[in-house]
Each structure stands twice: as C-alpha cells, then as structure tokens.
Length: 124
Image 1 (cartoon, rainbow, N blue to C red):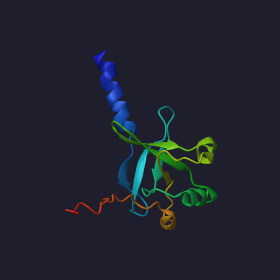
Image 2: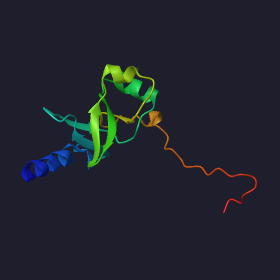
Image 3: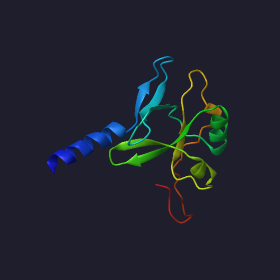
Image 4: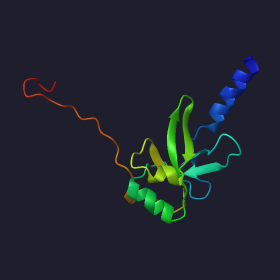
C-alpha cells in the first residue's frame, strides 16, 4: 500500500510542467509530459494566449495546451477540437514553442486586482 502511494506521488510530480531554457534559443519555455500514458515531451511558450492567439498558433501548425493546475503543480493537456470549439475557456492556453517566432502580439493580459471604493469609505 505504501509503495503504491509513493509511486503515485512520483508520477504526479514527473507529469508536471516546469520552466526550462530552450536548448536552441535559450529562451524560457514550459516543458512537461503531455499525457499520463504514452506521453511525449511538450515544449511551450509560457505566455497564455487569447482566442485569436490560439487560432494563429493552430494555423502555424502548433499544438495548443490547457495549462491545468493540480496539487503537484501545473500540467499540459493537449486541446482537442471539442475543447477548442467551446466558447468558455476553463484554463490558460499555451502553444508549442517555435524558436524565434513568439506569439507576443496575442498574449492574454494578466488579470489585475482592482479595489472597489464606495464614496463613503476612504481608500486606505
């Protein structure tokens, strides 16, 4: 029983994506396994994409991935046609890395926390 638990924890950690440097262009990328079984190594640009960015990435022949948060970290899950067609996006979307060809114009802006002030309460 204990050995199975340890093996599961090791598998979970091995499946998670981490920041690495690209071997060719030395820019930061997300690298991790793309599945639980028969996995391939996925190397992605770490910046999340807008819907238009995903469309451009797909037209360039890139694979897009959901960046899913799990207990052990973050995992890369390939997006299928079914999930791409859905209007609601549940996760951040990243695309396969191509050296010298970033999708910077199509990155999703970071969510900023804004404080809401009532006219009666001071902002401090």
